[in-house]
Length: 289
Image 1 (cartoon, rainbow, N blue to C red):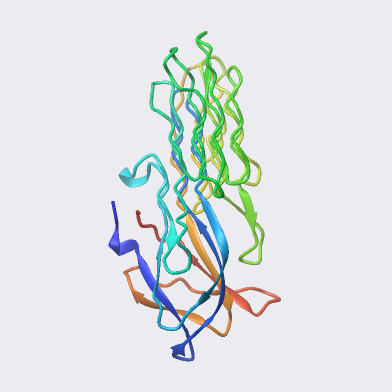
Image 2: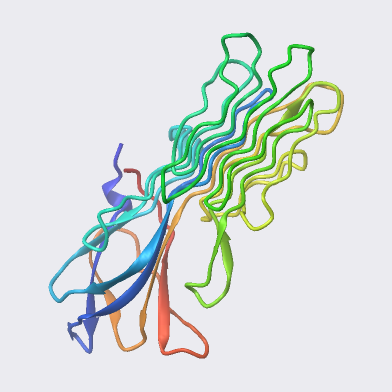
């Protein structure tokens, strides 16, 4: 599925003239949706970063991946990319598995495995994309009535394994200072616990993935995976949580600027970075790849 209205093409300029200059970039894909009913946490979106040189007359198309489960989007997160800067696409985070048989999926980071309700269920976490993320954790496999899902993988670490009613922790994300402030991205969502006490695991502390028992969602435009829900009661209540949309950030010298060539979103306002000669543009309007 594609959304042309959510794409933006830009080029470099200075004083109205074409501009060649160095940039730094961070590309984060959308996080995956968690599973429900003892489900695994959603995987964090894949992360791609580096440096490049903008070339005069070249058009760069930017797409930001949607969070898994949002607005009818697939449970897996959407991909993000910048054309003509890097050929590597940041891969959307994998969806968490569920006790009711919904299979966890691979992604930038893999979704956590759901509780193995029967011998044929897959409770192991899904794998991540090398260089972009990590694997999800394993859900419980006992059939005693309690169940818990593994944590979704994060860009910085694997998701944690579940134990008894305790959902696995979401894998930690990574911190980036591209904006001048250290910020966490692409953490995995916590796995959920079901039955009896409904404990949910906690999200990785630096990750901005979704929480478990406290039902907190991932930070907007962080690429964090959704957390499996457990309400801390004995009601068996448990649900799923959407992943967060991704983000694309471009850092460049204050002397240069980006010029919109096409696409309907507005060009984001650049932000000057204190104590430097740089500024950054932060793209958050989503489009599917």
